[in-house]
Each structure stands twice: as structure tokens, then as C-alpha cells.
Image (cartoon, rainbow, N blue to C red; front, side, top):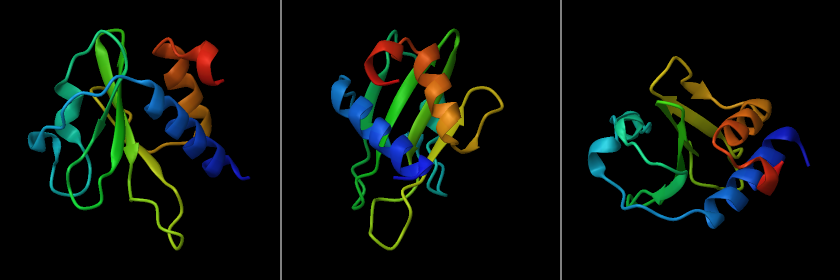
Length: 115
């Protein structure tokens, strides 16, 4: 298993364990990212699932006064790598490296569960 596969497996395990909030269409920016979700404030990490045909999944992580959104860039297909990306209320957007996922989970208080 490579780093991306391990990160994706961790994402799936975390996603399954969190409470779900309703998806808001306004979160979509039109290019496949969820820019609007960075304006959601929650007291604890929560999950969401887009209602689009691909049903991509995401996690909203409150970190201090900021919000980081980790989500599937593409819906899993055997011919496309499993790619996680982020949107954030701070300069942090783009493809998510496995080490960054670990750090985000730690900052959101999820260390004991998945690392």
C-alpha cells in the first residue's frame, strides 16, 4: 500500500466515525472544490457527502478559529488514483500530502483514533 492509499484509508475510517451534517450546494465553487465549506464553523469535526451523481465525501475540521475541509477530489474509480484535497480558510489549498492529513487530524483532536 502506498502513502496515498494509506491516507485515503485513514480518511475513510475518520469519515465513517464522524457525525454527518447536510451538504449545502453553495459550498461548490464550480471547479470541483468546496470553497464555501470553509465558512462553516463546527465545534467538532463533522462529515458531509455531496449529493451530486458522484457523491464525493468530505470532512470539516475546526482548527482553532480556522476551518479546513478535506475531501475526495474524484469519486473512486479503478482507473484514477484516490486523491484527497483541501480547502481552508487559511493558505492551505491544494492536493493533500499524507503527512499533512496526519497533522490536520492531530490539530482537530483526532490523534488517538487514527494515527
